Image 1: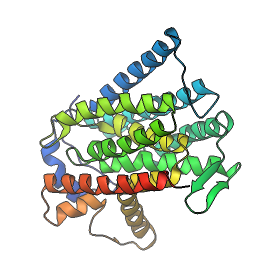
Image 2 (image 1 turned 90 degrees about the horizontal axis):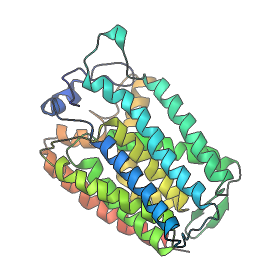
Image 3 (image 1 turned 30 degrees about the vertical axis):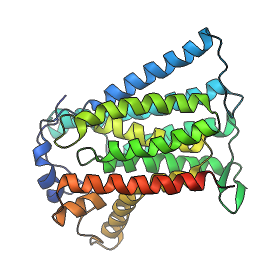
Length: 315
């Protein structure tokens, strides 16, 4: 499945010539990498859990509802991946406007909120998570407001990773580093389902990254980026570390934050706040080579992950 040459448009259906200029060399690169990782990760994760059951090995977790925990993770990865496939089809095939297959932004956002609401309800109802832990302040109970909080976090990270997936090895490399941190957290609290899932997922991302670094021979596509962002958020919420999630995934926060500020400027002030967004595209506009931007993001991600781990282990 190869990405074809077509004009990209923003949230207001306006052309994005700067984006198209920096991404014209990516036309023809396959965009099915994310789907392959999703399928492989889900199959290996389910087989690993079945192996634990067949061998009668104990599956330790922070939650009594172990299979609900696995269900939430599987649903997160699978549902957002299926949603992203629609936009991947639009990139692969050049269709007349009347045969538009890709989802409009508002329709896509509504579906994301619905999927995130299902996940948030399961976190609240099945795993009994209704709180956030903030260092120095302790545990803060949100009760039913936790569902709203979780929906916002999941949708935000789903789109953040998707926005970041613009340079060779950028989103997948940053995500790899961030997931290593969460794997350490999951192992420290002996959460077998989550640590097992992260381990399998990491293996897929590392294998994919070999072909995704500059010059990329394959891209994640929306099916991978949306699913990875949403599931990354779910992992952070499942581990009870939403504050660390914002730090460890800090670069994703910067990427979507710059894009949201730009959208607000266009919508309410009829002008751009930044010359271009997201942040990595602005660095390209400044003249930074693509590999330089990616390496700087990776280094910053390592620093944020170390700091996020320190915060995660604070009382």
